[in-house]
Length: 493
Image 1 (tube, rainbow, N blue to C red):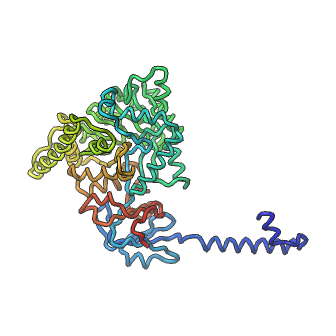
Image 2 (image 1 turned 60 degrees about the vertical axis):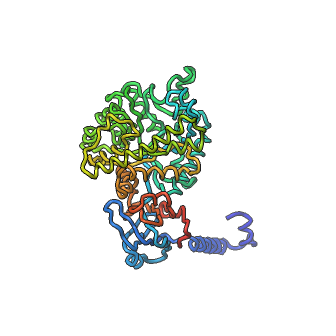
């Protein structure tokens, strides 16, 4: 108690010690009673018209979720849960809305917000679509990047993404520090599995940097793999930053022994390894080395999918560029030439037509086309179908790191997932890819991904039925993380 306060309660400094002690205890008990009276109820009952269980596909209607100290205690029919909600319970009624688990973006880049450069500028650089924007991010102040990352994280959460796996491009410690700030309650955002710096071979991503500065630039964003010893050292450097997962970008120069050394070292520390692998060679290297998940996997053959299935390797879809995504970005940020604009529009239309044709062929029992002879855009519909047919375990991430005019980061991220349905994935499997399946891939199936007892109370609600219309995911009305309401557009009580 402060000195002025003591004078107010004890004007007579000569009062007996016993009386002064009694008064102090009385005041403390009174204050404690007032604080206790202001503490919110530890139990919450969330009621809704429907609840979808992605794991089983069953629907409870009407439904309720009983939450205790930020975790789900019980789930069931609303009438039953009402009787089980004993004591001081806060009730939140979202009306006829449909409840789902909090969504998981298993592949994102919170610290990138790349504006696509004009086509002529792209042509001047190796990896011209991505590398210039990435390098601009690298030379920004780390403090600025963290603040931008915090904004992206909050916008993801507001769109219903309650857990993300950030796979690189966050500087040396940006994502681990943001993760810790969110966990400590200093910043609002989703749960983050942080990967720290991405492990690459020297020839990957950027070439021909200023020789005097090249290493310093690369070290802000990457850890280089150059032989098995350095591969192990790269993992240990990320371990020092207390990462949750190791991210590797595989190209044709990465060897199986090098990637195997990364995976062995990471697994010793109980860290999973996610490998960016697009072409067939890199995918095979990832399979042979024993990756935990293969990110993108665009050119995976049926034989490789079978190997992934047999080894229990996850396939992580990243449908970022599917459809007219980049055309919309170009429209909002650059002036396209008279040559490029019709090319982009024509490419979008051909993608849609290929999906329509493929869907009709599949319904008639046709064989899947050979993806090895197709470009990435051309095979995506086939890729989704072949992954589904193979039985390989799969999840999905937005791979978002692009500035999307007119959308928040969360809105842009969520917009990528319904495209999987356009490519032939049933709506329920799309939901599984970003809830139960993703949780298993992350190794967090006991924490998130389902509305089940013992898991974190992460919930989202949409007005309609997302199984009938998967685009409902783009119109999340209610978001709860860890039992705390983040968003409540309808003012549910």
